[in-house]
Amino acid sequence: MERKKANIWRSLGLGLLVFLVVVVYAYGTEVTQVDLSELREERRQESLVRVIRALVRPDIIAYDQEEARVNAPILVPCPEGNLPEIEPAPEGGPRLVISPGCAAPGESVHVEGFGFLANAEGPLRFVPGSDPNNNVSLGRDFINTDSSGHFEADLVLPERESDEVQYIRAVVEKSVGLPHFTKTAYDTWDKIIETVFLALLATTIGTALAVPLSFIAARNLMKTMRSPLAAVSLTALGWLAGIALAYQLSNWLGTVSEQAVASLLISGLSVVLFPVLAALVFRWAVPAEVVELPSREVRIARMVALLGLVVLTIYWLYALAGLMGLLGTQLVGVLGIFAFMGSFLFHGGDILRTLIPFIAAFIGGAATGSLLGRLGQVAAERLSVGVVRIMNIAIAALTGATFLAVFGWIVGWLYEIGNASLTLWGPAAVGAALGAFAAVRTKPKDTLPIGMVIYYIARTVFNTLRSVEALVMAIVFVIAVGIGPFAGMLALGLHTIVSLGKLYSEQVESIATGPMEAIQATGANRLQTIVYAVIPQIIPPYISYTLYRWDINVRMSTIIGFVGGGGIGFLLQQNINLLNYRGASTQMVAIAVVVATLDYVSSVVRERYT
Image (tube, rainbow, N blue to C red; front, side, top):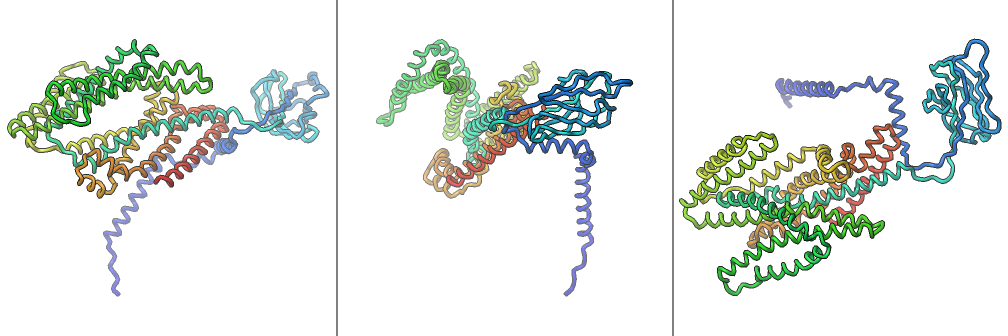
């Protein structure tokens, strides 16, 4: 059998590749400053051993201590001439006998103890200075007493010369009584509970917002969404105008309702009676059966009634928020150990009141955008090509001018430019030109892939915010709401939204297309397709991702606690800064136990529901 000839170029290429790998790792070693000489230093090794021993002895269980403390005088060095008179230790209690009674620095003295606690242990230290109660000590040796409370030890005197009398201190401790949890254990318990609920709230709130956002970030759902240029432009303008008008209206209603909802009776009646009134108005404005087309006046009256119903709904939300705040304040002083329920009601009302303008803005933008978009769709379908072209140019120019003007205003506010020609009129002119150019280049009756535009915007936002660590988000929220777990919850919640939004959307993109095609073949709209063809396929992985995210949030809360985000990390940072490694070990054990427990719970849930 003829052997193949060696390919010299392939061999050279392989050798070059190996050489490049070696160069890359060599430079990486230089950049990361790999150096084991520090590890071999005796000082480093002693510190490492001390820390490891502390970490494997978490401060969880302790005993009450019975202590015997005795200070015995000593001279360092020996004075010239005769030794001064040193009062001997009294009989009948723990006492130390030092021989000799003086010595030079670096020499060893023999220390013998009598009458100490039996079968106990403790440190033997040198106390510099003339104050026997001085907390500063040098050198250390451990002593163990026998059954009679006696011990013997040799102590090397440190380099500490003085003309005054100095001391050697023996402290013997013995555990008594039953074991009990330490203060560190109780503090750790409080903080780990705070961490678990911090992560729980961040996960649930983040999941609730990530689920709907994941649908607009799924390519397979958005690629079929197309609309004419007029519909797209009017939808964008409608969203912008609806958000602005609804936000201003809700703020005005909030100001008007402040006096009305200050009374518990009035706010309670408003909350109870409004649903009844709303049901009657809605039943008249949107009848279940239409026998004949009503007159124009009736249709206008129904539209006005629905608009008034929207305004009253916003007022009802303010009344509900006021009622929650008033009831919460009353219940805090009544519920005793369950006062947190009243506090929850109060803060829930405060949160609702804060969110009402944003909820109203979203609903107003969606309603206005949908209405104007439908008008643009109908106009593009029914009008002639020439009229549609002129309409597209005008609407696209207006939309481009509006959006770039808003963008320029935001840039001017951020950078404090203060020049309207640069931040307002200039961008508006450029936007109008770009909009008109896009309308000229687009055929009047053509549809645009608006779904893919929304898809790319959503994925860009997800990827941008996901690249910002929760630690940085926590710093921002600490500035906004102050140090504490609330800032940590907001940071983890935002990071959860963008992370789960990406994971959820990728899961939507990988579903089977057969059920979607079958549902669409029946004439189902987009919402019905999502409800009946998409959601049944994504429930199991969504549950799995959500539980895993809760696990991640528990571990991430350890890190954000270092910047004031609350949770167990705040306590862990304090103990590390104070070199209290036994306390830090207690917090690490608590984190490990919680993470292991969550992993077990999530595995059970996944097994049952996935």
